[in-house]
Length: 365
Image (tube, rainbow, N blue to C red):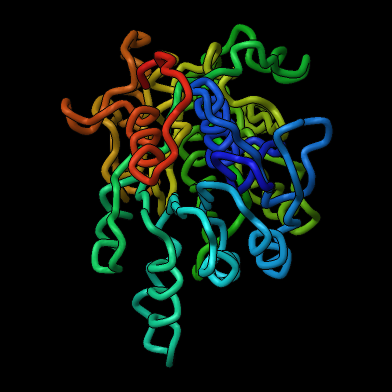
């Protein structure tokens, strides 16, 4: 980890989630711009991937042990958990290089607003360790606005580079010939009311409401990785709530599949999340020309049909999306003047003293 321009810290595929796919594309962008890059993976090692230096195994202790030895010119931490944030900040306080943190969601808000003694203070101090904070959405930016370090707003989207990725035979067979609603779930996590964070109840109920009159309609649920026993049972119960056998058999569940490959056969992408940062998958769907219906819990990119997270409002919104022809646009930016995320990120590195050795034109997101 000594002679590196940028050390990326965060989840790296597999499994493929929005953040892990983004970190992989950031690494490619850094290399294209002539900078050297290494990765310490929030998960395990990287197999045969030469960029992966170490695996953190989700352990705060390993975050602290590995990052305190870093001599990279820039350490760029992609936030995972509150405990790993504290460990990374402790390790990097005496770092010789510059530090950047990207916050991908709003999971820090309860800690920043906590009334428990010291929780808010220690969270703010941890964030102040970093020279630059990157927020992926306006909502995340607002939550970080009073922390202290400069906050940059950069959506977590870079052009898709895995065009060669293929679906399994089972997934391709399921999607072939149908009108496909596609939704993605990174984890089967639930909120305090027992609802899945990714809104699977809404996706399944909306599909069931439409499927009786649409025999061509199918719902494909893409999981980032195989669910554990508890998650499998939760998913089984959700699907079992669909009483009609024919409709239930038109629900397909797949794990470890490249979501971007599924967009070639998707009619509509559903994002009924109860909370969100800046969903990478939405921007990927738009780039693939797929209409999107998403919950309005955060501001969405232009062109997305937004609706409240309550299930009764979703079937009509999905029908509106199904009436749309496939779109052919670049993923719309929230502001016409918004910079290409790749250029914006590289300029942060330059400002922190890590100039690219050569200039390579990047694809505009």
